Image (tube, rainbow, N blue to C red):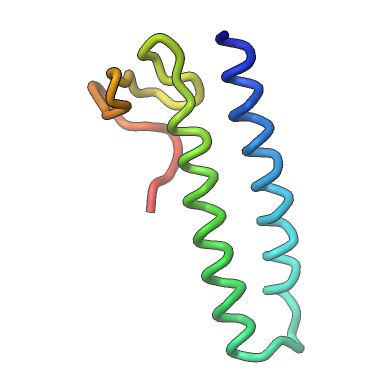
Length: 87
């Protein structure tokens, strides 16, 4: 139901936020190589996209739960923009 769907999205967001924190910690190191920095940057971008999907795709009965847009059965926007930054 509604609560389970919301909790699932929030749990996914929590997992992704932990991964983002770890990635940013690695990126903040002055000792990593340029290649590693590029890899961590790509990881960060992938994680942000994953977060956007987790929050943006959470819907129940055609209503977005964690964004500001309504969705139809095909999960496409029917009004407005989401509060989540999309890349």
